[in-house]
Length: 304
Ligand code: PSU
Ligand code: MN
Image (cartoon, rainbow, N blue to C red; front, side, top):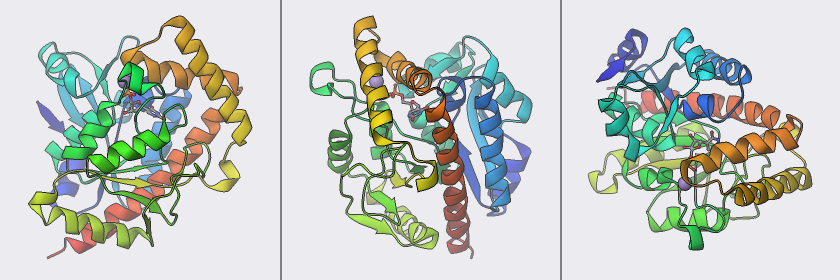
């Protein structure tokens, strides 16, 4: 059921760097047509930085690795595309559904295909109020066990960032800041939360990945957090207010489970008049550049 595009297959066979990309951000994370434009721009940044993009999603139950442009367009505009996390995988495969892959599912499929580096915007995490609701994204469990490196801009302040970091620590996931020792907060470079390690550069990241992969006992993901470039960051008060208002609205409407994250993202875009979407796009493009660089350095280390 794994369908890897010819380009991605050739790259993997020849130790050419490949970068995996998710599709939930396309189908459930941004409005059409910006979602498609962004997905295509991200692919182009990866190509311009010397790697091969592999956008991942589920089409008629097949696990597609390396969507073409028409497929990306479909994920952007088709109605009724499901959001598949780990628990949904067997169902959407057996029922031959179209489903967008979350960070968790994209990691699983990237691992199946043999892709180490995966670039996204933000990961799921421990939601605010989780001590009551138990709402903790399956992304965190996946980071604990699946051998893929995820490059992101931290986690959004819709989440409980201190608890998200605690959870990752408990699960043994290395959380590495890209040239920073502070956890970035997605729309802003600063969260006020310390990280233990700052990566010097892309090569340093590749060395750490290589070390972890050469020790079976250290199986699991790695999280690399790249701060949004200052010039694209949002004003902290503006974004915090939009987040607060969106959380309140979700609560009033009784939004739960897998609908929570897409609802909050959409609401924040509306409340900021599209500004948060622009920041979101800029940070992903930046992550793509860093991720491609890490994939390139990692390929170099794996040359025999
Ligand atoms: N965070 C974002 N943008 C996104 C997502 C998270 O800033 O698009 C998506 C990712 O696909 C992530 C998923 O894996 O939401 C997490 O959903 P949940 O909280 O239901 O696990
Ligand atoms: Mn959840």
